[in-house]
View 1 (cartoon, rainbow, N blue to C red):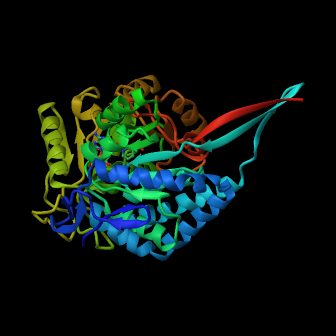
View 2: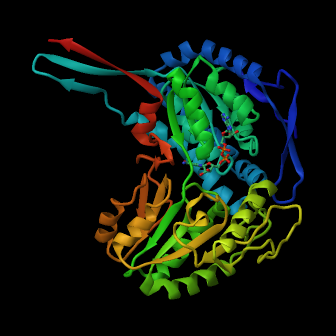
View 3: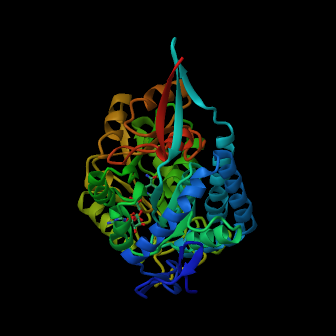
Length: 480
Ligand code: NAD
């Protein structure tokens, strides 16, 4: 398969002709040749976006909401293809690619279309004047996304950006470019006006950097690692671009003394190992009240040992490979570090498989790994590994649990498990984090604010926060 950039409604090869490889993490085989685009391709995309902007911005929000529904309808027709391509490119189990990636990418468009229809004009009455809040598009926006939930995270930005009248330059991760290509084909199929959605493939420091530096791009919505987020902020902030940064996490799963382990154990397994632990919201540190620690460990390890790790295309597979051999080596270096730091491997820790398929020496497979015995301040327990590795820690009081939950540089998400929902809700307010779930995990209402505190990000996405990010507001004050 050879894919191209999508600029001005047309699939075009990169101007400088350079291509690079996209490989399957489950077996190391080449899947596609993709453009290694350059600044010239970004410039061409910006020119196209600039030409398309006046007409697109002139539509009403409701007209653009109709476009979002058209995109959702068209994606619905290729839903299985989306799931298959996402599973191939990322190595995630096909069942997960269907239920999360394909389904939620479509629902992102549906949600924002419906949300737009519920918006009321914003006015503020004074005794002698009325304030009308007028929103206009930011203009051209750059959307830069990671490899873990490729289409889901891209559409989470594309839908509100289009809705608010912006034209888009999108750059998906070079590791997982194929579902973005399907999205571009969908845009072409439904005749979205040329230049409204442009897609440029390539490396972060080349294409990503060119997007950050382009003076005609007014806003950057970035999801990725915290260290890349620093580069994004450093480059874009002096240009006064509007910035949204969704970054890394090291999220705590807190199990209180009154928690029901029948519910908690499968919940904690899911929070730790969904998508091979490669969800920014994954609960990679489990904090357990000391009265439940031994029982929890026993039952948690039993369930982890029983997980089916193997071929992503197999319907019964629960966990596939991690994203690449390079990432696998990084994960293994953290497992070595954990042992150096005094940790004990309670499950996993090796490439040997538990499921029916594998190991494939060319695939980036590793067993889900559970580590006990580490200090909560150890490097393994505080740095983002972004893989199927979880550390277990015991605490004695709620205060101690909160101190441990808040001890990292991150503040993205977390969960609290208790039979007393009110106690969980009160404790949640003390977790330094953008999102806290009580007795659940990854339960999303798209109207709610999504984002992180501390080094997990700046700003919020979701519902009205996304609409606000992708627009400028003018307050018009009219004297009676
Ligand atoms: P990454 O930071 O390496 O890459 C993300 C994107 O940035 C890619 O498209 C990449 O090409 C691009 N990029 C890299 N260097 C760049 C540069 N100099 N200028 C502009 N763009 C550049 O992240 P990743 O490895 O793809 O994804 C994993 C990370 O993403 C993890 O840290 C994870 O926690 C985080 N993440 C966060 C969220 C969230 O919502 N907070 C969601 C998913 C993933």
